[in-house]
Amino acid sequence: MSAPSVPLVLNTTSASVELARSLGLRLVDEWSEQPDQLHVFFDEGRLVIGLAPHNRENPVAVDFELSLRNRHPGKELLLKAVGGSRNRATVLDATAGLGRDSFLMASYGCTVTMCERMPVVAALLADGLRRAGRSYDCAEIASRMDLRQENAAAYLAGLAEADCPDVVYLDPMFPVSGKSALVKKEMRLFHSLVGLDEDSGVLLDLALQRARHRVVVKRPPKAPYLGERKPQLSIAGKAVRFDIYPLKAFAK
Ligand SMILES: C[S@@+](CC[C@H](N)C(=O)[O-])C[C@H]1O[C@@H](n2cnc3c(N)ncnc32)[C@H](O)[C@@H]1O
Image 1 (cartoon, rainbow, N blue to C red):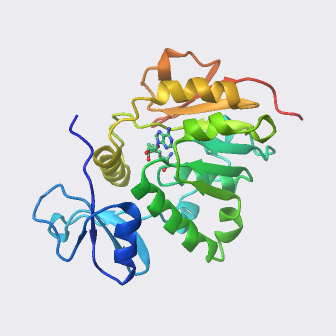
Image 2 (tube, helix red, strand yellow; image 1 turned 135 degrees about the vertical axis):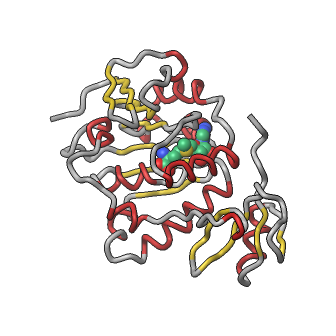
């Protein structure tokens, strides 16, 4: 596996300079000639990341309005995994990424704290949240989502007992072959940006100590258990499996 690549900030608006400074990335005025080079830039009011245009691949942004349209209410396995539709759990999404799963959980009524340790990914997520906060359809859901740009292990370790979440949710990087073109593109992007989350077994151990009710781990259907820890329950669909480590039942 090659080392994660460092994106460049493409100078498209006056905000690009501050973005490059805050992310500690190089600001450039032109697309790089390198075929695999990622660029972060503002495009029509959104922060996006992607390859140069000759690759003919649309850049990726966090788009919660699209996530809302693509929901399948009542059918999502994630809802069952985090505790069912009557559950208004507090969730720590310890591997927030582009926030799709967080948004889904918040749309069920969960209050979600999101930890994302990669500054570029956290910036994309913050930008998506900002736009969701101004969207008629998404604002109420986004109001239940709180982003922290930090390592979830440090966040969990520092929590006071009374502030521990009901559920800790983990979706660490894993070498998968997603079926849809979008999933493939996003997974490729994550692989080149983030690499593999090799420390996620340790994060699971900590999550099991700090969650009040359960820990849920998202895996590809045939993947080994995270940290070789066998869950008490798994719910599997065609593309994904949720391993559930129940600790204490939710109140009825
Ligand atoms: C596969 S992605 C998660 C995708 C996410 N579930 C979604 O719906 O968009 C994994 C993300 O978790 C982040 N991550 C992994 N370990 C972390 C940790 N200990 N603390 C914070 N973020 C972490 C990685 O940087 C990466 O962005």
